[in-house]
Amino acid sequence: MVKEQVFVWQGLDRNGRGSKGEIESMNLAMAKVQLRRQGIRAKRVRKKARTRFRGGGKISAADTAVFTRQLATMMKAGVPLVQSFDIVAEGFNNTGMHVVVCGIRNEVASGARLAVALGKYSRHFDDLYVNMVDAGESSGTLETMLQRIAGYQEKSGVLKTKIRKALTYPLAVTLVALVVATILLVKVVPQFAETFHSFGAELPAFTRFVLAISGFFQDWLLVILSVLIAAVPLFRKLSKHSRKFAEAVDRITLKTPLLRGILINAVSARFSRTLATTCAAGVPLVEALDAVAGTAGNSVYTRAIQQIRADVSSGSPLYYSIQGTGLYPTMLTQMVAVGEESGSLDEMLGRAADHYEAAVDKAVDNLSELLEPAIMSILGILVGGLVVAMYLPIFMLGSVV
Image 1 (cartoon, rainbow, N blue to C red):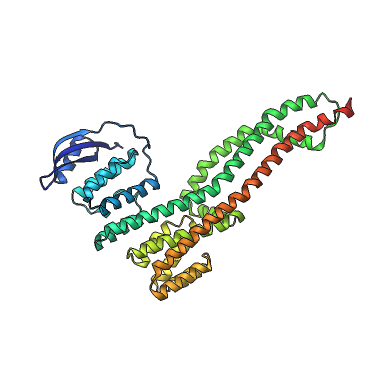
Image 2 (spheres, rainbow, N blue to C red):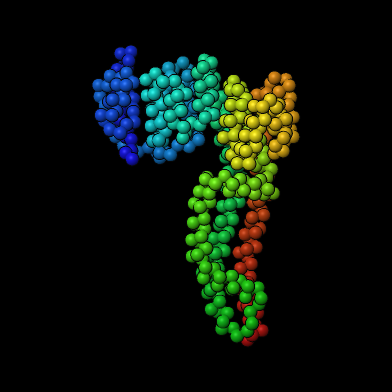
């Protein structure tokens, strides 16, 4: 497969005004053909020189959030849409995002609707994003819609950061503890073992136990490391391609005592925030639930939302369908019921999202405060136990002499 290249062009648009931009194409000739199809009379087309951008080429959710916020700000300031893309593109240090913004700009400059142009980059702009932009264009409220999308993305990003914070610290400390213990067992303990053999006395049971573990790790360490290294990509592949495996993992995660409350609140916050944003944008409820299912972040809840959608499409009230899953907190169900009865569903969902996001924030802080001393204590016991096991025979040396 031939990799597309980026070409820089200057010329006149279909209205005869001077214009410039970038376009992706297989080669120079194809780039000129594409420009002619867009109604652009190119005076100069050249391959873009490679530039060292600090951000690399990978596009993250944070990049799309910044793009949306900047585009909304440009439109609010009265800057024309095509010119807004030029300004936003120049502000990106990320090569990949720079190319994507320029590609969208060229599509819009050639007469395509913004929603259609975004749809061609579905890897970075999901159905929820495209549908909301489409609704904004159709209703003449694109600027407002972009502001709502930006707010939604920023709050979703904060929520993901909080969850990542809750998981990263204990995992990192546990990994350090395992590495330290492995080094002690494989490198340090064998040195003591050679000394113990010259004692001529029976070693304490605790020391013999540690020596046995050390021998096991010396014999099987490479095998264990190989299995772990192979398990990581295998786990990712199964999680991505096997629905049953992904659901099993998500169910186990939801039953983990310390994480259960955080995950349920996080899923409830994401559900409320996404549904509130789409309802406020005027997206029909059934279509909004399709978008919500794609942002659930947990396969168990994705299936539940799909069932909610089926129930709502058959005429059931939303709150009754949510209650029927048995997965969401009672307070969320009650707030949805009040919102449906009062005709302020988006407002009530927004309040629910604020509540559950605050609950996640508090739970993460509490978990960090709880785990920090617990993990330090476990690490101390682990390392301290190994040290005691090695020095215990030395303390008993007097009985042998």
